[in-house]
Length: 355
Image (cartoon, rainbow, N blue to C red; front, side, top):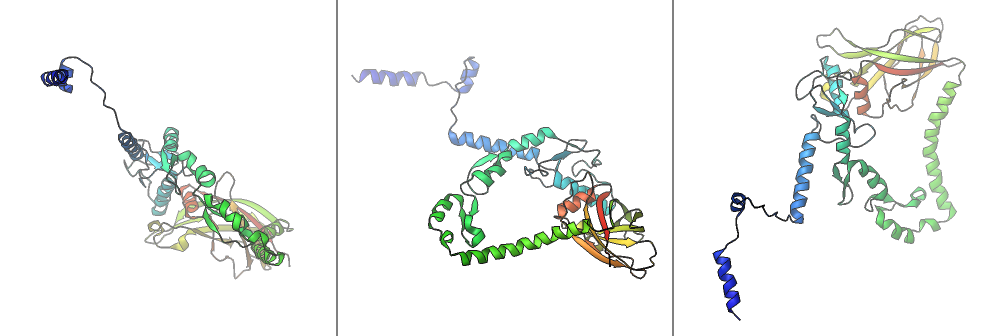
């Protein structure tokens, strides 16, 4: 009974398995090696990293977020990629320094006319996986925002009765358990009323803004003017950037709007946070004081995001300039978008206050 086993052992010693080199020399097909799950995962991660390195922005070396504006990728004439935020920042920096904007890789000239969007890369980036901020899952970048806002069970959430005072906050999968023990639905009306009154105070502040806008638009003498602010340079040894409109007529008077970056800071190109301040200047001579209210909005065919704010100034022959007021932009990125253009387009609503 032991002889067959000894014979098979002897045959295996006499005929050892062929190596890959011997199989190639004998024209026999190579046997495929089975990959383990960890090897496949390692190869996928390696591919993702290589693609991320190829498709990333040449400035921030990161992939753009898939949002309404930030997912856009521009390319220079030589094909180097720049995300929308970095692209507008480069153009804004060049405007502040009075230089020609160039690609950070090849130094070719860039502008909104010379550069174009790369739709193929934008679609490829939107399909690359990205980790969820709350759970271990990885999803395509175009589906990540919806997952984190609607589907992820680990996403942070608040109690539905937060509006009447409940302070509970936690992951979404614990919300049902909390609702079963939350005592706020059973609170007496007096305590609920206190919370509602506190909310009403906050909403009243927002309503006042819109009520004042309606009052401004309903005044007897109101004008709408679309402004185009052009860039200029001061005559100082170190020139500074400022913007100015041509003269325009409103309320039977001649006006000019001027704007500057970061309150006339010496080197606004060295800081990341930027803002614009502006002033309304009266160019006509008055016979009687003139009190006006005005609001600045984004101009036609622009995407500038401004927070509505009403300004009130009284002009006379001794006071022909309004104080420098901050243009109510949503954030610094909106300021870079304005600076990156050849001109700044705004709409001015000016009304005379009747005494």
